[in-house]
Length: 237
Image 1: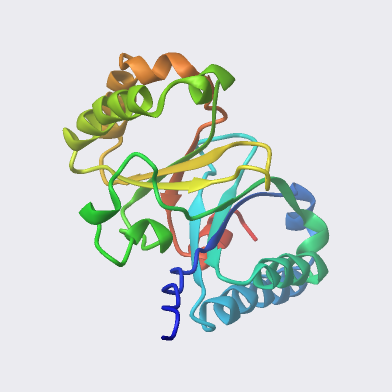
Image 2: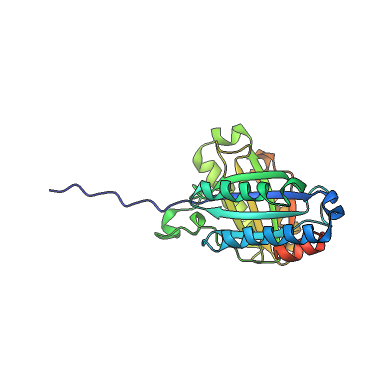
């Protein structure tokens, strides 16, 4: 009798959030050089998207002083992330485009939500943006005592955490995992069209029991969805 083969696991995505600052010296270059550089950058972005890879651009100028824009990517092949970064570095604009921060993570099933509640296809394993106006992104690290707690205690506290989130249906959450592959344990990305709803949600989450086990959840980035071409125009690129 043939041995039953295990079902293949649903593949998981690598996710990267890259934050850039455009050097103001770029604006001192001749207009034709800047236009050529801008068109080249837009083409690199378009070529990545054309490969059915997830990519989104967000503006942070006017919101933070240290970051001008952010690129959100998801892929099943880490080489795609490396190729995109290499092309940006070697582009005309590359020497003037500083990557101030990046966060690498991966999709994964939550241990706090039952598998049967999701069915065979787990949406947590596939990044599917709601494409709302705002994206709030930050690294997240829990204290070591959290992991020493019994699973039933952690599930109870996370149940409260989830119930608070459900009170704000306008806010959707993308949680990805960074254990061993970057400095944080999670990257948390909330999408919404209403800034005040997100502020109220975070304030209420501070009062939950699980919040006592938060070691770090900064820096927090308020990102505004905007086409890359519009971002570059606004920056005077």
